[in-house]
Each structure stands twice: as C-alpha cells, then as structure tokens.
Length: 131
Image (cartoon, rainbow, N blue to C red):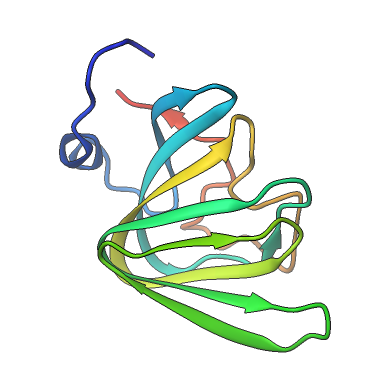
C-alpha cells in the first residue's frame, strides 16, 4: 500500500468480479475493502469480529439468523451502513451494487465457518491488492 489517495470509483472500475474485494487502504490492523455485489453470497459467521458495510451503489441485503434460527433481512441502499455483530450468522445478497467494508486484516470473506457450498461467483479470500 502506498500513502497516496485512492479514488473508490477508479478502484471499482479496475475489476469486474463480484464478491471479490480489493483492499483500498489499511488502518491499524484493519483492511478497507471495496467489492462489487450481485447474486447470493453464502451463510457464514465471523466468530471474533464485527463486519462493517457501507453501500456505495445499488442495493445490498443482509439476511441475519439469530441464535433461535429466526431470520430477518436488513435492506441497505446507497449511503446506508450496517454492522453485523461478531458471531452472527449472515448471508449477503444483492441485485447489483458495490460496497465498502472494514474488516481486520486476514478476515476471510466466507467467515470462520459457512453453510453449504460456496457459489462459484463468491471468492473466498482475505482480499486482493489493487492492480
């Protein structure tokens, strides 16, 4: 990472894959990541960290499952933020858009555990460097 500004629109224009985040900055032990979103992610859990989302474009939905198995969906639009608390099972989906996330460096996009097969369009990664 360099100490120069990163334009988020340019960073997003540099790749087309969905659910394959790019690291645009690092702050302390955290990555700031951007990603394109479309389709369904996978149910997953981050045991030791919260997950922060900011919708940059489009719509981004997060299905959340509580400890009793009850589900509800948080619907986010451009400019909305939401934090999934650590240990909460969740499944993102989107009709199309882009997001910014704050996560501890090394956090897998598919969590510490996930349910079912990882869809082919979901990149199980700790983030990629910008080109």
